[in-house]
Image 1 (cartoon, one colour):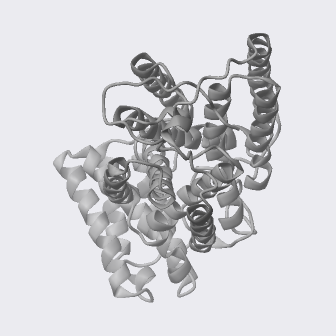
Image 2: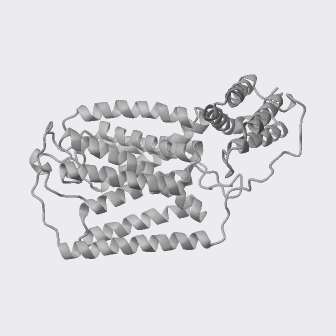
Image 3: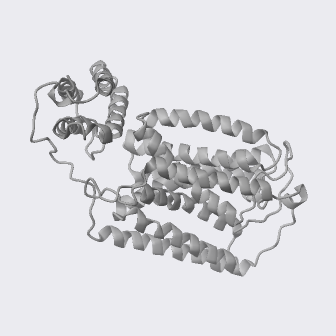
Length: 424
């Protein structure tokens, strides 16, 4: 779908249009980018043991660098533009994950906050420029508004997509159908005569949960490790990221050579607005309303159906309790040492009254433990199970991966001390 509107001259550096035409290639590569945003962030966060917050800091710095390059250009260039989209995709995903996993903000609150923030950004953009069209991104202020909007749409799409999974218990393969169906319906309304700018941004938001669900479906194991865990094709986050990064690169090379998505001239970016069919726009607006009500009804129905949720968060203490240090005797000392360091940091912060620091260290401890599962568990399943049970007790005291609020510091300190004893 495309969006056409008259680009009104404003103060600032005038450029050729900085956004590609919304051809089929635009939507294909956008979905590829959102899939990478999900799988690549998960791989760095868990498999490399970097941790959620550190990963967010890394990609925020990369985003600043990518935007610095993109904003200096005077026209749309495929490689830096889509590189920036990929980085924004990963960064927006991480920001939502921090709210959910690090700060324990419910997904419905994140969805509401990002919806309001997106409305504010759109409002400020419209008040200053009198257009939200991607064909009018010809000055630095407009491009700045555009990238802020893109970042918020990724964060919003992540929150609403995860909230949908939480409400319904659908598997990733089934969850793909909802955003795909909504995008198809929006496309039909656009072809009927809906406002093209509204249709574009609604579809743009929905590509985020679509791409994320595709990524989860490809990366998740074929058999769930716990009740309610996602299942898929078991390609893993690294392989999925490589496949989609390769597809993105191939598409960008094609677009660079063919210029199939380039607004060729400044006149094209300032083409006269084509007056739409107002009655059809009003009918289509009603269609969007019906679509929203139908989607809400579907989610309410799915939520009411029996479905498998996350594994129960009751007592997960291992039936096997080993002597201090025995559980890790077959594990590599370097890995055990890294776990001890994070546990010690969390305990030290808890004792000093630094609740945020203790929580962050416990979160990093969880991420590292999860990342090492595939390498540690085969070495000693009994030892791994024993440590995993105590690790879960620690996480429960912080409200990490558990619905309960954080417990008093004394309880956190006791469980951390027990874990350190188990680690030797």
